Image (cartoon, rainbow, N blue to C red):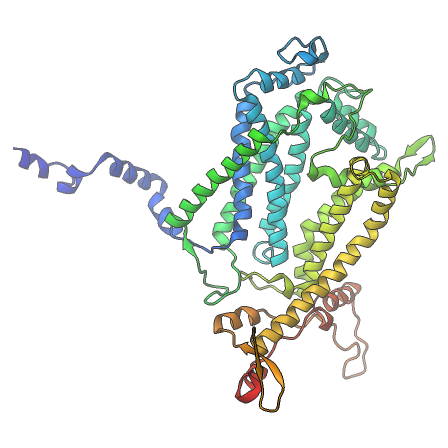
Amino acid sequence: MDGARSVSGKGGGRGATTGNGERLADWADGRLGVYALAKANLRKVFPDHWSFMLGEVCLYSFLILILTGVYLTLFFEPSGVEVVYNGSYEPLGGVIMTRAYESTLEISFDVRGGLLIRQIHHWAALVFVAGMLVHMMRVFFTGAFRKPREVNWLFGWTLLMLGLITGLTGYSLPDDLLSGTGVRFAQGAILSVPVVGTYLSFFLFGGEFPGHDIISRFFPIHVLLLPGIMLGLVVAHLILVFYHKHTQYPGPGRDQRSVVGMPFMPVYMAKAGGFFFLVFGVLSLMGAIATINPVWAFGPYRPDLVTTGAQPDWYLGFSEGLIRVMPGWEINAFGHTLALGVFIPFSLFPLIMLAIAVYPFIEAWITGDKREHHILDRPRNAPVRTALGVAWLSLYGVLLIGGGNDVVATHLHLSINSITWFVRIGFFVVPVLAFVVTKRICLGLQRRDRDKVLHGRETGVIKRLPHGEYVEVHAPLSREELHTLTQHEQVPPYEIGPRVDTNGVVRRVKGAQRLRARLARAMYGPDSHIPKPTAEEHRELTSGDHQH
């Protein structure tokens, strides 16, 4: 009877022996198409390079931010109601403070694991923004933003901007003296906007600064609105990475149609899972041993006080540097004051960031290149683009010094006026110097690559020729190394062409075309690259007695 039952029933023997897990998989596949989706994507190949982990650091930091943020939300009370503190931190006993600041102290001293989670959350925020910045710089320097990834570049740029705003709203929630000073700084910048600045400030703060509504308004923006938008952008960003396939560095067997690497399952997923716990462990260690944002040391916010050496988090330091070093220019007309000393740097910040956002489209317009690019550039082979990136980073560094000019002055025993003037001059001089030096370094590296292709690698072995000359023996490069050093294209820059045709008629040229031609010569003209060695040159120098 047992044998009869084993072969009877619907579906024959296979249906009778099907396990619960397999039946659940069949049920899900019939409704969601899971099998076809997994078959198409789980064996997708991803290239392996250490710089690709920068994007993973951003993703894992964001996930850690969500996890720790949910925990903190359970205990934080975003209220501007004033109370008298009688908690466990005795130095602040009897001090009047907002309920938001009091609940932050309770999380830090009374909630089990609260201080650790707070510090992991703050460190993860810093690492998240730093990871996005470094990741975007990797994308920029290697040209990974080119077609078809311009939209993904915009997604990443939007995530960076939202990360800055989320960080500002996040460290403002505790309502300590440091964060309150930062909010006051932001309110002053808003007031500098002509005509509507006062209205915007009153709308945001619910009346005169500081008001009682700003914390309760920042809270849903910080924990719900901005993270929700960012989560959607992260998902869209990853979908486009899957859809476009991953970029890869030049090398043998790699071209615009094939990818050399490891499959998504199981190799890449196993490495990604281990890397997530590594990032989580490092952030936990930082949160456990490195104090950050000790709000109890600052005290509650009071509009008539400011902390000594008040500094924002590093990612907003350059915006403060713009305002600190700007001369206090004002224009008084028709009973109104236009604070140029605040409004101009307040406007420069979004303009500089906007230039970063639209750069892929500007470069595509200059080159006129409509092809897809899946092989990355070596930064030395795009010297002007690399120099522009380094110039931007140098500008950021100079303004970061300006944003902390008081701390730099006290720690290095320098005059704050000297630092301010250094930043004012460096704002115009340092990026230009960085551009020139970086471009020359890239051209020097191109010359070295050319010599290495033609003459081989230096071995350090000295040989005496029959006529008495001493030369160093060079070892020829492998075919793989030759391919890596010579695979890049050197496309001639866009040119307008003759202004007069064969019939003597002057051709009209638009101003946009002349501008495009000038920019193309600057970025891709003869002064921006060293010609690659040709195959004939390589054969001539490596044949016969030319190779030592």
